[in-house]
Amino acid sequence: MRKVIQLRFLFTPLLAIFLNGELRGLTGPIHKDGPITMALVLASNGVVSNSNTWLGWWIERDEGWHTYWEHPGNVGLTPNLDWELPDGFKVESLQFPFPKRVQMAGVKAYGHKGKTLYLAQIKVPEIAVGEQVKLTAKARWMVCSNVCLPQYTELSITLPVMELPDSDDKWETKFTEFLNDQPEEIPQHWDVQATEIGQFTKLSVTYFDKLNVKDVYLFGGDYLVCSDAKQNLRSLSSGFELLLPKPIWPKENPTHLYGLLRITNSANIQNFYTLEVPLK
Image 1: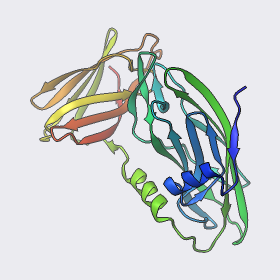
Image 2 (image 1 turned 180 degrees about the vertical axis):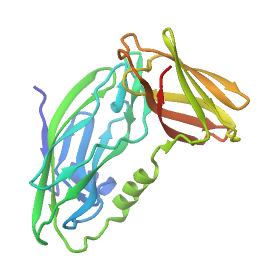
Image 3 (image 1 turned 90 degrees about the vertical axis):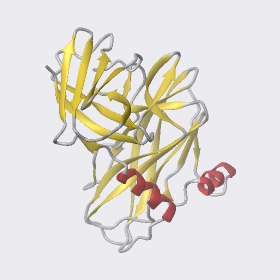
Image 4 (image 1 turned 90 degrees about the horizontal axis):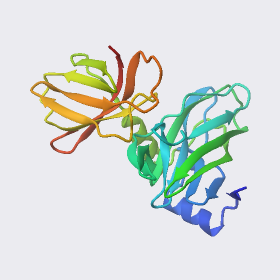
């Protein structure tokens, strides 16, 4: 069994480096295991009774290592938090940052490298000011380089209940950047269609915007797109077609094509769109 190291003392050297480097807000006990360092974080020094707040899961990976997106692709495991909450608390689904293409043993998938923040919205019930509430989550993930390490631990954070918490500038900025950098909805005036053609799915997008499209990539969801194969782009005068290879074992009888559509323009600016289109 792999040894799990819990760092709980404020002045240990590693914790001091971690805090001085990135974590200056309210931070739970830091977990360090091999190439991964992580903690639960809050962008202020407390929470307000009967309110909604965002709670972060901060992960740092050593160079050359990656974890996976919510839809990993052909290989990988979705990072997950299984919450144990006090009475009255509720938590929404974990929100993931935009993925990158990663590779394990020659197989391409969807994941994250370096430092990333995941957010989940927490509903705080009616609690007296001055109380302190501990939130706990069982975390599981897979970190990969030349090998893959399935890992898990218990994370926690204690939240003081206050009338008016103070925000931390550094963490507040990171939380705000994350929330502002969300995928867009497909514009209503675009005509988007998905058609199954044997071992491929053809995504056709017609629009009349001057987008100057340089590249298009679909991070497929629900095991409908092979993450390890090339997607063939055909530019049209008023849009594009993207030919998407199916996985070896695709989802049976799918009704929709899901995913995150990345469009890169001629200035190398990327825009992400949430895709959900019926399959023909």
